[in-house]
Length: 104
Image 1 (cartoon, rainbow, N blue to C red):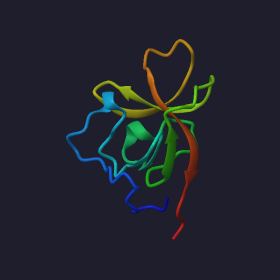
Image 2 (cartoon, rainbow, N blue to C red; image 1 turned 90 degrees about the horizontal axis):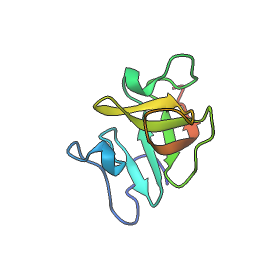
Image 3 (cartoon, one colour; image 1 turned 180 degrees about the vertical axis):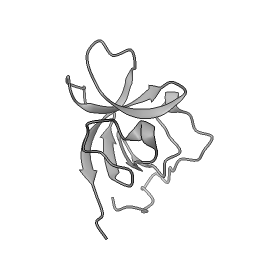
């Protein structure tokens, strides 16, 4: 699936979809258990990580997180990316399995 392509099932997010459903308003595209989205804002760029604003990430909701994996989780009242630990209070919505960056 390429950036901007409509998945076969035709699902796209809109701003009203909520984090608890595993959906975010960050230009996300869904295909089964996987979601591709743009990294936007400080909650999506954890300190000390290689994730930068403007990156494109693929998140898999079916992957079980391991300690240290970066996951999408509800952070406060909005989605965010955290380094997961077994004792983390946030429930992971999915594990980041791929990151791409455009240089031009």
